[in-house]
Length: 122
Image (cartoon, rainbow, N blue to C red; front, side):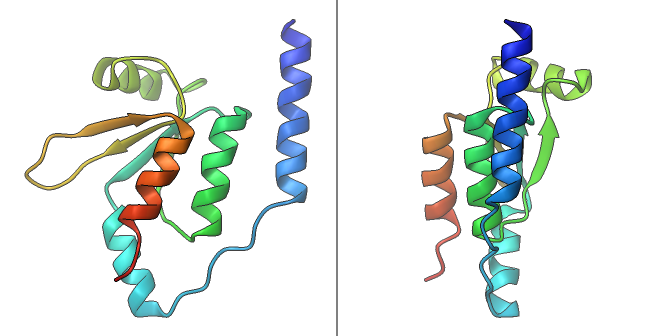
């Protein structure tokens, strides 16, 4: 079973590498606005998790600058996720906003919907 998971993980990473989306190009002022909105977002993820790959592809496609933390191999990141987010589940987006409580958002579709709404330029 361990070998099958390892093999499937490598297949997912290979397919992802071969089909990476091109990042969106924005004018500098718009990119600066988006970067400011995402500067306190952190994605806790596993490298070969298909749901994490889905979120990372969205981040790349939309040219978002979000800190990525490995919650599988890095024990400090895993501990932070479990102690503050409540569970060892990925993907998880840590959302810090000034003067507000830190939020921990799980589920790839919910993370993508949140990021799409949050980085919308009006």
